[in-house]
Image 1: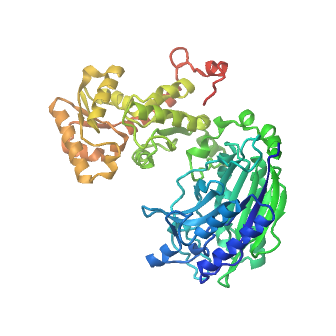
Image 2: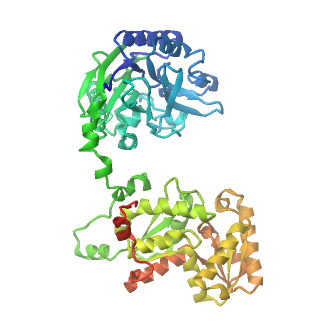
Image 3: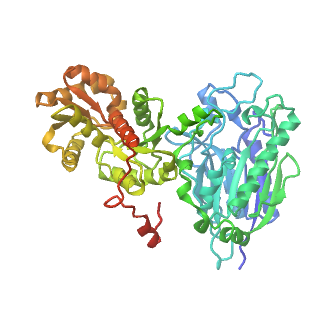
Length: 589
């Protein structure tokens, strides 16, 4: 009935730039054997374990750079095979970090879990949170951290996995997760694994003992003070996040004094699900840290304090996936006059339901010069997995599901919402159902504007497929008898940005000219990505024909609705379905 696993962290001390690979792997084999002698079933090795931590160096020679990476199958490559062969012979699983060069020339900071019984790699992880910079620091004496220069951000996600054979056969196989070094500082890393029921998190690292420039603290700190702070931060996150995700964590350091001048912290440790350290290093040299981990201790936290299914409130977590950098709230002031001005600000959220941020940025750039001081327009770009472009029904449905989940927690901060997809996008009606604030899409807004300033309009569309969809939407909106037609410029949404600019401008101008020849006195631009090209179209068709950009038209339509005090009607089709969902116990938003 036991679910206890004996796990070892194989801490590795100083590894110099000039140390041979043979010498380093010999040390790793000794650590593996020592852990095996103490009954370890699993041994964790550090980040980039087979060499020194080369991202501290500025390397220009490509052959030299490639020599630090592992190529081919890590289990059978000449430089690493001995470790995996020994693990197989000893029947001890290993998790080991290394610099990975893929067959197609990409480079990652990676680790693998090797299952000794089957000789297979159960899981590979590639480091996601790369610290430091691409370029060296201006201070020649500073310790560089150039992982962004040498590695791509990981592309495999934080995936938990089960490991067979570690506990008795009548018990479920334990659930493991992996992260590397800087990942441990990010709550998101742990929570994604926690949401998969992780019971043991494995984490190898190389952490500077004296590089305060990376911590936002004074660069004048004394070395011993810097090392103490670095070690404190390391232990803090491991103990905190082990507790908040009810999981064991095992960390293995590469430590010591590399090259006689680069100090790295120790701190190899094993932490239980209550955040208590149950084993830790005694030196900053090669050392085995080992403990018995009773996985039944994870149950209390997972079933009570951190029972995610009962206690998490994801409707309020939208900001976590909706934005990366900080967006501060407006400044407050003691001036009564300024307070009145602030309270009268009209706030509109420009919602881009695809994940291409350049479209959001272009829309904001076009709109902001047209705004009065009492209007604020913020941009929102749908997070992945929203499609990068909405060019069909499935794209629209996927983008709606992703976007509405991401923004609902922020909607109380805004007075109106503009959906910047030129279509009868389902997000428009979805937001109208859930919100009382006015909502409009840029297509509908452009048609209202076109009928205000002209008698007959035409639409410049992107692809031939969008031409058909736009014609259907125009009929739905009831404007078909005023429309002379929809002309495609033969480009996809993303083509507006990545195609040759001359080709794009010519295609749009020719499409607009054809519409004018059909009798249009007003042209609407049928994609948010066209907004920045409005002037070129105006020049091509002459000053007597009006060109309407739906983004600007939509923002000012909404400003009028706000000033009128208008809300979305809730008696009919836009009545929220929330009560029905709750009654069905389907609060999936």
